[in-house]
Image 1 (tube, rainbow, N blue to C red):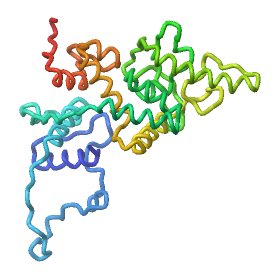
Image 2: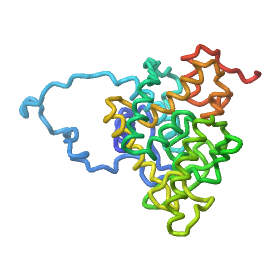
Image 3: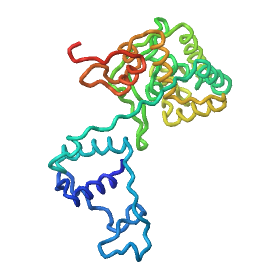
Image 4: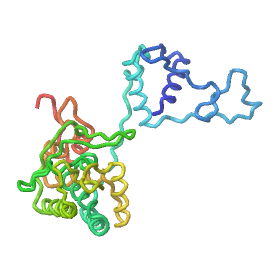
Amino acid sequence: MRTATIQHAFAVLADERLIVLRHGRTAVVAGEANTNVDNGRARRPGRGHDCKLAGCRPHVCKPMKAKTIRNMSGAFATAKRWDWIDWNPAESTKPPTVAQRPLPATAPEDVAAVIAEGRKTHPKMALYLWLAAITGARPGELCGLQACDIDLKRGILHLAFNYLVKNGQRVRKDTKTHQDRYLAIDPVTCAMIREHLDAIRASLADFGLDLPESACIFSNDPKGVSPWNPDWATPKVGELAAAAGVKLNIKGLRHFTASQLLAARFDLRNTAAALAMAAVEPPRSGTTPTLYRRLTGEPPPTSHN
């Protein structure tokens, strides 16, 4: 929700004497916008305006959408916490329920079709998609993957970092949920990674160079110095899916992994651990695990479990 919308809502409520606005930790709470124009739209006319003479259309009240009401409830809570208002009128109300939309998972045949398309046109991207499908890793986690994070002898992949580019700055930091995890990978996956690394080593050997342990697995640099930008890799996945005639994105692959694990009767706790989801235990149970809990029919956790 835009800041101007929240400010306007607070200003209207203050005019109706439903809330009292005051200066809190920010300089101005409401009323900063131009009194005549708000983002190119005309504001409400003044007291001297005659709608009959001006030919204005009669106002028709429309109820807010459920999502808007829930957003406003959160906005009021934030305003009270920041000392913008003395009293939160939403505390005495019950937010409307949100209908749960179906969350269909991508069929394995569609995932296989996209990976097959990648092996024909972009082998490195095909490996990226394969790892995303079997590990459920986030784009930044895959882009931040280095050669030293993979133990092909024992078949273990270590996901501990997240790579992103923000305001032109390249950052390699811990993962979104601050969890690093070791995942077992099957012999087929080990063979695909080994084939990929052997091809890079062979090209470097022609120039008398070795592949460093810190080399990024997914990089357009011959020595793997700089990884792919996740914002570049994500649209590429969509392009491969379109070429294969499949509707798929990188987030859909993560949902595919979770759905396959749950269908194989992995419990939600282990599935969440493998994908480094938000907490599944109270009091900080995340939104995503809660959604999968509804899909699997698992009872919600309690604080004394």
